[in-house]
Amino acid sequence: MMKTKMNTPLSKLSSLPEAIQTAADYLTYAEERLSPEIWHYLQHGSASNISLQANRQALDAIQLMPRPLADVRRGQTTTTLFGQTLAHPIILAPLAYQCLYHPHGESATAMAANAQAGQFCVSSLASQTLEEIISAAGQPLWFQLYWQENRERTLKLLRRAIAAGYQAIVFTVDAPIKHATLQLPATVRAVNLEIPTSFPALTPQQSQVFDGWMAQAPRWEDLAWLRERTSLPLLIKGILHPEDAKQAIDLGCDGVVVSNHGGRVLDGAPASLVCLSQIVRAVAGRGTILFDSGIRNGRDVYKALALGADAVMLGRPYIWGLATAGALGVAHVIRLLRDELEMAMALTGSATLKEITNDKLHIS
Image (cartoon, rainbow, N blue to C red; front, side):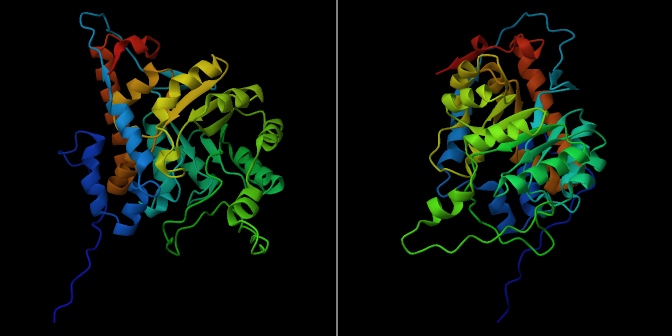
């Protein structure tokens, strides 16, 4: 009997196929170059994907209102965040273990962000060292910080990022419970983290959630403590409730990232876009607001900006580019979204990002 041959992932591309016209066109190429297990880990959210799907449904429900005859000559997409001028408002979000998708991993992503005059936020769960990544970038980067069991270990990681030259901290607070959905290969691990200490033994009467995981999760007093430990811009990622946004700003944080973690944590959490306007009102201009979760094209970027975000974080689509063609693919995805954003701006009469307002949306 002939044995069925397992499909072997295709090699990475060194040039871009002419057929690729949108970020979504990278999907097939990326899937062909990743194992089924890694592809599933990348593409799926949590459990039944309710929140993952909600992100897309919320964005698709909003339409753009054409405004012809406006003078948009000399239009541009530049923005300034925390003293750095960027050519566009598309920040590459912190995604873990990027060597799963390409041998050059986070370094390739960092180079692409710089090539497109943008910014990249490096994950605590990066598969290359913080120093190696920022060296490849050739510019200051942002660092996404996860709480490291206690204050001492968290401060040690924070100080390492600052010493390496990272110039903004994005503290992710919405994933204190990690769902392990992939057995990492031996060659890929979170190289910047110390081996976690094992949980203390629990009695049969104790809860793995409340007495185990959540006993080591950060709380508001830890956020206040963290704010006092760095003068760098500090953003809180994973905020959906306006009262949480207000409290973070009241504690001295510089901004929030409106995010449901791409649908990966609490299945059934609302779409990030649904929560954006309320958070904008709660922050009331006292901090920077970034939007995350569900961005797939430049029109999505436009919608988030029109509803009050200062910039967006792009997740899965740039990994499709990374898995296909490394840094070249990531840079191309950024450029595609920027081109789509510019087209949306031109056709709605918006010459600058400040002119992207909610009266140019049609919400059914």
